[in-house]
Every structure is written in C-alpha cells, then in structure tokens.
Amino acid sequence: MPAYSASAPGKIILFGEHAVVYGRPAIAVPVLQVRAKAIVSVDPRSFPGLVKLQAPDIGLETSLYDLPENHPLAAVLLKAAAAMQLSHIPACNIKISSNIPIAGGMGSGAAVSVAILRAFSASLGHPLSDQQVSEISYEVEVIHHGTPSGIDNTVITYAKPVYFVKGRRIETLRVKRPFTLVIGDTGIQSPTSSVVSDVHKAWEAAPAHYEGLFDAVGATTASARKAIEAGSVDALGPLMDENQAQLYKMGVSSPELDELIEVACSSGALGAKLSGAGRGGNMIALVTPETASKVAMAIADAGAVRTIMTEIPKT
Image (tube, rainbow, N blue to C red):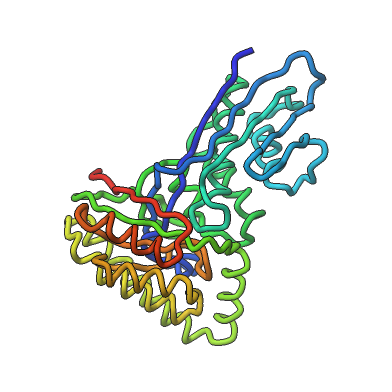
C-alpha cells in the first residue's frame, strides 16, 4: 500500500499576542523554513484500530490504544475519524517528524495536528477540507493550551498571513511589500497554557489596567496592518518596539528575551519583540536584507540557540 505524507509550516505572531485572547486583533504569518511532517502507511494485514505511532524527535513509539483519549495525538485521530464518520479506524502506521521548536511560540502542536489530519484523511481517500482541518486542530489546541486564541490552527492550516480577531471571519492579510525577519530562539520552553493562565489571573486581579493594555495592543496591531498593506515596512519597526513595551508591562517578557531584543536593535534591526506566549520561546527582529546576517550573528552570540531568517513575501 502507498504511503501518504503531508506537512505543515510553523508560524509566528507579528503583533497582538495575549490581547487576542480578549477579542483584540492579532497578525500572524507562516514560517515555511520549519515544518511538521506526517507519513501514514495503511496496513491491511493488521486488525482494525491498530494504529502505530512513531515520533522519533520526542522519543515516542506507541499505539493509539495505549494513549489516553485526551492525548493530542490520540485526540486528533479520534476527531478525524468522527469527522469522516468512520465506524472504525483502519490499521496504519503513522510517523511524525518536526523541526519546529516545541513550546517556542511557533505552533508546533498545531502543525503536527494539521499534518496528521491531511495525511490520515488522504490515506483513506477522504481528504478533509481546510475548514475541517482548522476546526479539528483548534479542538486539539484546546487540549494543548486550555483557551487558545485560534491563531495557530488558522495560519498554519491556510499557510497565509492573517489578520485575526477571535470569533470573526478569517481575513487574509495583503502584504504589499515583502519584508525580512530574523527569529531568535532563547532555547527556553514556555508552554502557552501556563503563561495565558497567568495573564488571565492578572486580568482578573486588575481588569481595568489590563483592558487598557489590551486596547493599546489592539491599536498597535491595527496600525501594523495599515503599514503592511500600504507597503510601509519602515513603520513596522517602531510598532514592534511599541508592542514589546506593552507585552513587557503584561509581565510576559523575560531577561533572556529582553537581552536578545536589545542586541538585535543595537545591531541594526529596525525593531524587535517577543513572539508568542513569552517568558522564553522566540523573539523576532525586523531587518533589511543587508543587516539580516549581522543581526542573526549578534543574537546567536548573545545566547540564541537557533536563528531563522524568513521573508514575508508579497501577497
């Protein structure tokens, strides 16, 4: 039997993290340089339901039967089977690989879900639609993060820049002029759920203060959208700095992120900020093609365990 494979990109949030959970807009873009991949091989010789799962990157080798139903890998398969109205899951082998940093704010969990959903449904001759893939991966994100914004599953499923407001129709972002980013990984894993939970507790304790911060983030994000759609790339740098200051006031930055951001700016970046939940994970810096290598080397020297250069293309 043939093997079916599918892959999905990582993502970064350009503007609006945390505030997006509270109804403000956010901007996110796919990162095609990193991907999750799933390969599904149907095994007609084995009895129905015997699904073998291999994820060498995390040292996992198990079967669907041995995982609890709320395990993300089990949940994505069970939800896919329900969506396809399968009476049973055919026996198969699923191998998962990914070079997206885990707990780094780049959507590793959603990318794995999207890759599995596409490869698994294709192997059964019933490819799920983008909307189904996004909806199911969101349901799995709830297991990962508790109260996810919906950004990860959306931007990763559609692999396009998006302007996202929770509960509203997805808006694809028009990029008039391409721009370049350097992503710097602190190497510190920072589970989104715990940081989101801390921000929620802080919001409950001081709602007026945090609503004011969220409003400010929303205004910054709206300005960033206008700049991107107008091709005013130079305006994005100060807006990134502004968003970072807002996130710092929320208490979601960290000394490691602060240092990489400062080094990036002093090395020629037009602006820089954390990306994702914060307290670890990744930061991003807006650069020109001429300064990209210099900034990447500087943040690597300052402690980034990995750097990625990515261009957000014209759309």
